[in-house]
Image (cartoon, rainbow, N blue to C red; front, side, top):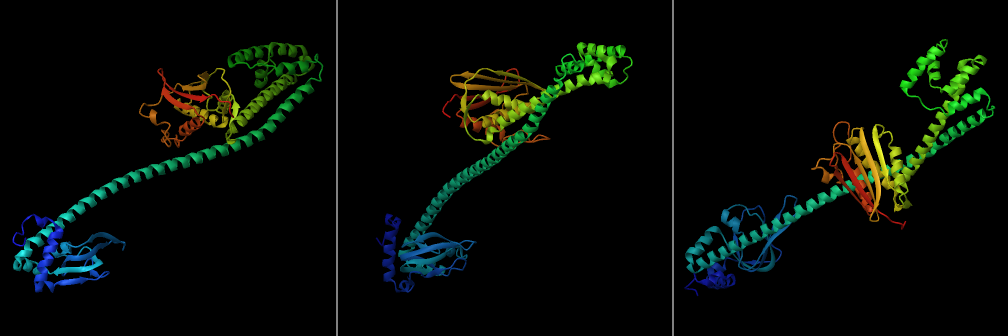
Length: 477
């Protein structure tokens, strides 16, 4: 074995180490270089020049590296047959690690010049030491490869977790925005309900006052011309501008002594029956006094119409604001659609609204939430049509579901944007005077989903956008 140092046994570290230890035991000058390793001792310190390289014959040495933040990482534990300080020994630079003895043992320590001397003076050690050093380098290289593979896997996992964290944060932010929006809508619902309650009292008072005035005028005998003029004014129909201009021209000819333009206009708005009464009784009183009886009827008529409109608005506002009740009820969703149309009447002022609300069954639903869906879609349609166009809303029952379709005559939705419109925070209202959080359709999608339905959007062949909402018919409130 000793005469054939190049044979295959040199690939086995334990066999090589046994051979080297045997040679050392036979050479006194090498035995003097043996150093006892006491557990816990620091063999060398990171950053300091390394005087010796150590071949561990027995025991363990742990290599550690101190990081800039003063934390200490354990890199590797070297056992028997390993060289400690190999890199610093080879390069002559300060050691990159600290070596601490973790298991008592012995090591052969060598200075650079001694190592060369051992190789020259003891040919039997030359090949075993070189092979052992090569084995160490191979093991370190394999260790580095494993570490690189592990680092790559950890980096990949870290990137994945970072992306998941980023997505979770975005979802959290979206949820936060949605909660803020819903809280605002709930607060708005409370304000609307309170406002409707406050407006209802003076509206009711106006209606009562109008009816009382009618009763007071009714105390006059039916034959009394003033009451007759009042009744004619109470049921007067509006006159269009062209007709009024023609009638004013005739009135000026018929009553040339009436110089006041305002009086001429009032007379032109009166029906022939009222003018006949004025002609019959004008000698008994001034024309202005007779006209005032007719105007009183018109004013009370206008008060009644305005009061009823206010009452209808209040009713719709109360119904619309049910979103803050957060409970389901058996209801006809067409009522919510009508309420929403009335509440948004100012936005729909110059838009033709077609309601094709076929009979549908009542269903369990949160009407306030659904009103928010109709509002979001209709407001978007108004924005798309720039306040002018045609809005069509239809309802029908199909396969035990209620289908609501809302279409407009706007420019439609670009095909590349269409798949994103229900995504949270997606909005095209980010330029000029338009602004949006991109929550309206996302919240609508969530509301319909919670109701067990679906909502889809698409472009119509003849232009414009159509939303199709399906809601299951339920009676389990």
